[in-house]
Every structure is written in C-alpha cells, then in structure tokens.
Image: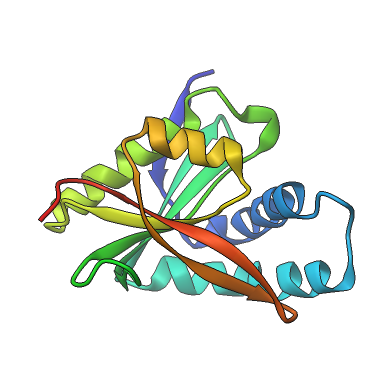
Length: 172
C-alpha cells in the first residue's frame, strides 16, 4: 500500500499524541524511563493539545499514512520566530516518524509537503531545533538542505540540553 500525505483533522488528535509519546521516548529516554520523562510526555503529548494545534490557523500538521495507519507527522508553526535569525518565522516544530518506518522516505515526503504549505504562505525559509546528540536527525536534515544557525537550550527538570537551530532556504 502506498504512502498517503494529508492535513490532520480533529479525529487524528489521539493518534498524533500516541505516536509522539512513542517517538519522544524512543529518541530521548535512551537509558530508560524516569519520572521527568513520564511527566513531560504525559503533559505535552495529549489529544487535547493536538486538537488545539489542529484548530489553530497559525499551524498545520501534515500526516503520513499507509492505509489507516499513522506512520509519521510534521507540525508547522507559521508564526514562530527563530531565536537565532532575526525576522525569520516558520518553524518545523515537530517531525516524528515511527522508528520501525524510518528510512522509507517518510520524512522526506513530510518535508516536501511542509515546503509547499510554507510557499503558499509566502515563506521561503523554515527553521527547526534538534537535539545536538540526535545524529540520525542531524544527518537527515543536512541531506534536506538545512544548515546550522546557532543553538538554544531545552530545559527539562533543571537539566539543559543543547538544541541546534537549523535553517533551510535562501539566505536574505
């Protein structure tokens, strides 16, 4: 069955939350689950939060499915300001693909769909933040034409984690 891309609707909220928890824990809880991780994912990745993202006209969530199954998604925030490039808005807030479906072109397809949506809104550049230790993601984004433009910290329970800021598109 072929991959199908489209915009998320209200009925997708619970599946988006479940996929997010799975991918986040797989990526960041390398040593196991601890309370801070559980608290974070159960607070951040809820069906209610995804329903709000879906309803927000400043955002879009592109999904990738095979048949009825959600394999990955990309969430855009068109108004989010880049912390390291003045005047740049348009963030890929999240790009998650289930690990068992990685390296099947899903991320590339999601980026292509997101690029089309950004162009429709007059955004020629887009930015994102990625954990500096997430080597597979860094390689993927580099292959997609993203370049590093500084960093910022993500804080969880008093621990700081460096995230690289990556930008794709024409320089001003």
